[in-house]
Structure formats: structure tokens, C-alpha cells
Amino acid sequence: MSTIPPELLFLAPLSVAAGIDLYLTLLLIGASPTLGLWPPLPGALGDLDSPGVLLMVGAMYVLEFAAERHPPTALVWNAFHSIIRPLSGALLALLLLDGHPIVVVASGAMLAALLSSVVHAVRSGGAVIRWLGAIATPSVLLVSLLEDGLVIGLVALTLDLPGWASAGALPLALASLPWAPSNLRAFTFAIRLAVARVFEPLTQRRWLWPDELPARVRASLGGDALAPGGAVRASPVGAYRLPGLPRFVTGWILIRGGSALLVRRRLGSLKRVALGALDASAVVERGFFLEVDLSVNEGGSSRVFFSLNGPSVASLEAEFLAPKKNL
Image 1 (cartoon, rainbow, N blue to C red):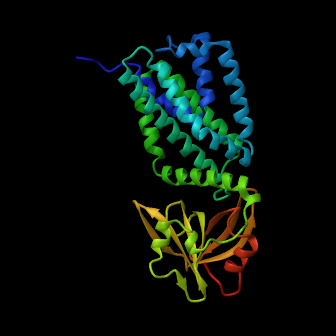
Image 2: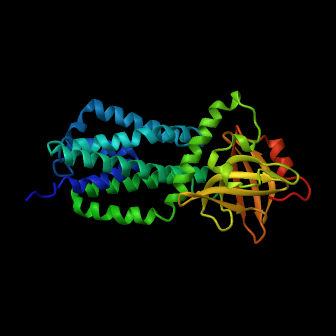
Image 3: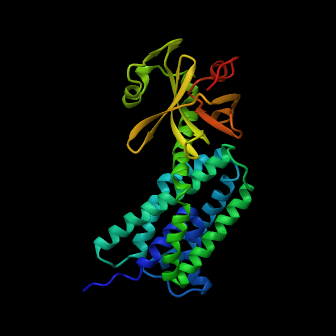
């Protein structure tokens, strides 16, 4: 009867660490044979101790640390690493499981790619929400130092006591579940913001009309393609802290006459949410997006974010800041 390879105990915690900070994880693994603080590395992980590899990984760690000091460069960096992370996680698993049957290696590579990708997206999505100014947070430097401390502890525990590290990775993942969906939505929305910023000079800022909407969004209007006071106007948005909704959601704002609603995907179908209880207080243009600040009647504030190839500042002000006009 075959036994479970002990190297699999290293897989989950190292994949989580790589999702948080890939280059610090690789640097610690590669330096461990030289430091002599842990037992011999499993599989072919010892190949990472090459001076050339360590120099390259160290340079990438410094570059990442510098890029994440500023939101625009952090957005571009993390968007690019949405491709790098799963590939790196898979390659890490290939080294770890070197010499095992192809089924074990392939399964481990897919699991590591998935874990690294999801952890990276959740972590980056949290940074996006902080960048959008939605919540008060510690400094970016402090957040980076806390993440690095977590990675150092997780990698050290994995190399010394892989069983405990593997068991500890599960509670860590469970603890992130309440924030994970919103963070994932924020990360994907930020990637769209970056793409829109690139093509913004080539497009005209405006609302979209019903015949330009995705078929499912258009179908959600039913017979309301036209409404009293004018045709339906729409734009894709991200929204933070709208009453009765998750912390961060994405969808479409649709203006029908003088009223607005949010159409968002939920459980495989589209849901319509009326926004009549919200009043706009300001429209602000940022480097990558337009922000509409909202005042919630029962206190607090919410924000809706439009990409730069969506409606113009003047158009949003006309819709949401005109006298007696509410969201």
C-alpha cells in the first residue's frame, strides 16, 4: 500500500508563503543550506541555493519592496504577478516533489498554483481596498513588514516542523475567509482599472447605452430599456460599503430617468439593488479611477468607483450632484 509522500506536508505552507511574498520565500529557502539552521531541504529545493538564483531573487525582492511603496506601481506589479504567482507556485511544487510519480507531481503543482494564486489575489485585494481610500490603515511600510514577518515565521516553521506548519496553514486560510470574496473582487476590479488607464487616451469618456451592455445585463432590465426621463445609461463600477451588500462588490450602475440601481452577479445570476437611499457628496478624479463619495442616511460613508474610460467627471456631477438628484 502506497504512503503519502512526507514532502506534501511542505506544500501548503510554502505555497501560502509564496502567495504572500514570493521572492522572500524563495530567498529563505535558497539561503537555508548556507545558514544551516534547518534540516536538509526535501526534493530538489536545494537547487535554489545557487548564488546566481539568490542574487536574482534578492534583487526581485528589493524591486517588489520598492514597487509596493506607491499604489500605482503596486497595482501594475501585482497585476503582472497574477500570472507569475501560479507559475512560481507550480515550479516550487515541481522542485519539492522531484522524483515522485507524475500523478503526485502534477497534482501537487496544480494545488500549489491554486493556493499561491488565491493567496496573492486576496492579499493584493486588501491592498487595493486600502489604496482606494476606503478604510484607515497602518502605513504601507508597516503592512509590508508584518507580511514579511509572517512569511519568515511560516517558512522557518515549515522547514523545521512541516507537520505543524501544514496544520497551521489551514487556520490561516480560514481566518481570511470573511474578507476573501471582497478582496478577490477588489483585485480583479483593480486590474480592469489598470487596463482602462492604458487605453483611456484612445477612448471617449461616456456612459454606455443598452445595446452596448453585455447580454445578461441588458436582459436584467426586462422591459425597462427605456425609462421616464431618458434612456438607460450604464457603466461598470466597483463599490465599497453599500448598505446591505458585502464590503466590496463589482457590477453595473444603471441610471433610469432620475433613479439608479446596481446590477451585480450573485450565485450565478444577476441581482438588482436599488440605490435610492444614498446621496452623492463629491466626485473626485484619481490617477486610475473616478470616485463618487456617498453619504449613507443612517451615518457612515460609501464609495463607488468608475474607470477612466467610463463617464466623465462633469457627467457624474450632473447625474449625482445636481439639485434634488439622489443615487
